[in-house]
Length: 209
Ligand code: AMP
Image (tube, rainbow, N blue to C red; front, side, top):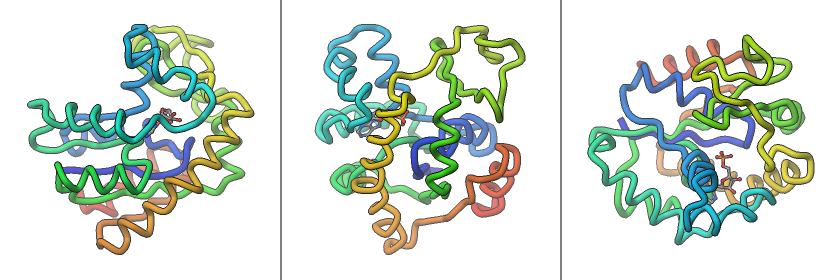
């Protein structure tokens, strides 16, 4: 099954994608995670995108599309994938349609006020990318990842100014994808407000999984 997870920053797409992998048995492909790994490795790509990402802006379409195209060509994505954080612009969606036929687009819906609250308290594992929250999803031990024992940190783009920028970018460039995919009959809305277990349940029901 080929799925896109759409929604504002902080809607829990990443957290849900990690859980949904067990249900749909396809790889979770997060462009944000790929970029952060490149930054950590100080690769050419990482050096190119670090300042853009830290500022809450979007990496250019050409770079992002090439990255996803290459990733989807790998063997593990042959039978499907969960794309988390891609596409984020109409040109990216159009490019994707040229090299892969998506089955469904899951739109994780969340009001702005909740987005701000969630992003402000997010803590991310430096090692595996898992997300926690200081109020809603605390790790068992402060500052330590439950999954791999890695160090938890605040992403530079989870700081106040970058959050505002990411929301603005989302509204202007990514939100139009909701209508774009609705018109194609591919969109499924899922309320991202409840706790992750309930959102996963809604996701399963909506997709009849
Ligand atoms: P995420 O982890 O999905 O919130 O992504 C973190 C950051 O990576 C975004 O704020 C962008 O700067 C960049 N990024 C991730 N996916 C894309 C994309 N599809 N297009 C452009 N930039 C992206």
